[in-house]
Length: 181
Length: 187
Image (tube, rainbow over all chains, first blue to last red; front, side, top):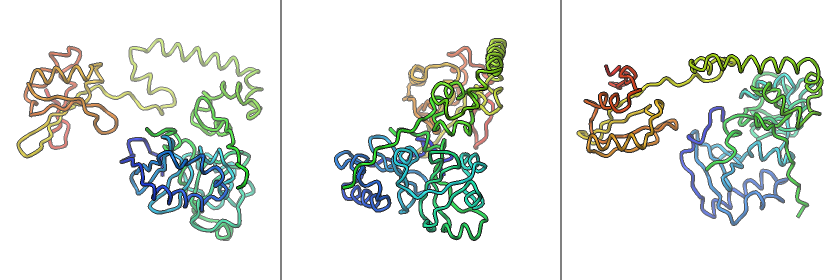
């Protein structure tokens, strides 16, 4: 999704109303309960929260010029990888085997066999259509953020085709956009 | 309230910007290697061994050879840029594209793209153009980050002469018009 993504794509940045800001905070807090203690540091109530609009109904939540979250249409908010690296335990994790890394890093969606093979790992609690962190075999940090197409159980059962949509991965456009001015 | 989880410090590669452990999957692992050896030797134990061994010679060899090749072909800059891996974008062709955009039916704007490729300062150029044609001329950020000059009015009739006369290093063959969406050489 962010394969080609530059600051040029941002069609407009708005400082949002306090009520919208509250809503965003709330939905992020609901989505990532583990993040709640630090939420005040991440999205200070005082400092302005900016929502940058991009093509394809994509929104970026930007605080102090740093993109922190993104979402599509009214979908769930997902953290950027830089944020996830800081707080790795806020999301459910799926792990792909080593062979899949290079494909994921060039933007491929995550296929079921890469998750079910010995190098992969599946959290059985993951349902369909939820944001997940994609980890890699033998690596410490997440390499992508995905949005599950089917539940973990289905992935195991079907073991074929796309299991998780790749939303944001290392070295894509959003990753390179450390700051948004 | 639960205790604040501290943010994890992630070691990002100083060369490619990825977390150090993913450097091997980056596009420029070779370039990252020296940095990795210095800053994260435990991540890639093989690397350290190699570096101490024979590969050190190789690297220096490579360095030498690249510096030689660069030195010999500085005149053909375009080719050098394409060489490494064939992945690097080739240098943009030096050409000036002139397009007439009509607005309000009978008024038009002439946009000139590509003057900067000839090392012309756009702000100076726009001033000169404005003076010569007695119209407004401004440097505008066009699509895809490029800067272009917008001149009010239709000046396409003698802009080519003006450009080639004012900036001697611009050949007339490098000037193109856009007519009906097609690029047409001006001369």
